[in-house]
Image (tube, helix red, strand yellow):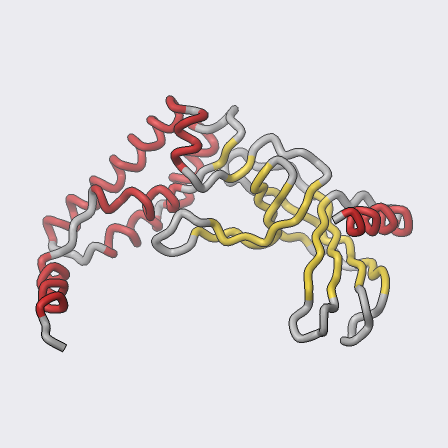
Length: 222
């Protein structure tokens, strides 16, 4: 919003800070009351984790229906939170989670005046279209890991969910390998969890117990 950008400029003038990240956030049950929050980057973007640190500088509070002070509020504490670039000029502040059984990323978007050289892409087909060789390497790495776990699960007749939890147990290492090595030099970060949620059904089968339970449910009369 142009008005929020104008508030950011006023905030920087008054505080002598260099806020570059901002967003309007409405407060629930306060009749349209909102705050515009301001942050600045306090660390560079990590190539392996796809995250940076953001310092909270303060906010502008509109209306005065709650206990919040009206106008600009300048932070006096050293509060930093993680940030995850989601496009060239937007970043998720203090929130990044891949939804269960989905490739969708839960985020809290803020606008940025600084362009990010890399950002998170949840659609593997987009990664494949723009960087086919890197996408092939990612698929080989993750399919190999999923297949290995699926073979153990099948031989021991574990529930299919066992594969997911074992895969997630190595999530940090897989994330670092994909983003710190395979996708380094590209404009994307990619989550191995998003890949698992979308493609693992090709490689993971239900256990005998799960198949029996599914058969029972499909054939009951109620």
